[in-house]
Length: 192
Ligand code: FES
Image (cartoon, rainbow, N blue to C red):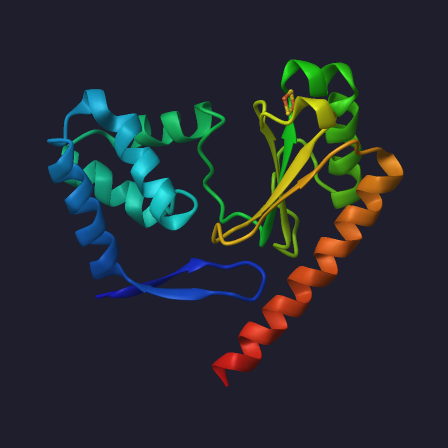
């Protein structure tokens, strides 16, 4: 019987997670919300908050423990933009789509970033797992529009960049790419 699974398969940070942990974490969520179908999205949000995405194993367990068909759970996971079924990149680039930023060109900036990162319409995360690209609402920094925010996957880093333009975006991506590679190397070195 399989007892562990690789939950994160990107940027060289595969993480072996005990399936028992998945079962017990999902159980705690199900108990908290009474396993009720009306709270399905809330339970899924909790799972995503915990793992950074929705691991297939956790969704299967959620379905098993609540009796909600897996196909219904997967339909919600794929329909709503807030959910992701793949592990996020080391850095997540959030492009503000609030009114001020939209008017100052962030719709174009989003497309430019997609291009720089080599993403197609079906992927939000780069193949090397270094970046994910997301749209966001107003960061409350409209005077700096157009604005992007960069956060690390584990939430420990958060950077705001204002007045961004195409040339600036290239420099920003290059800077965070080097930074991510360096940090991943350091972490790998630290594990030796
Ligand atoms: S609209 Fe982008 S920071 Fe407010």
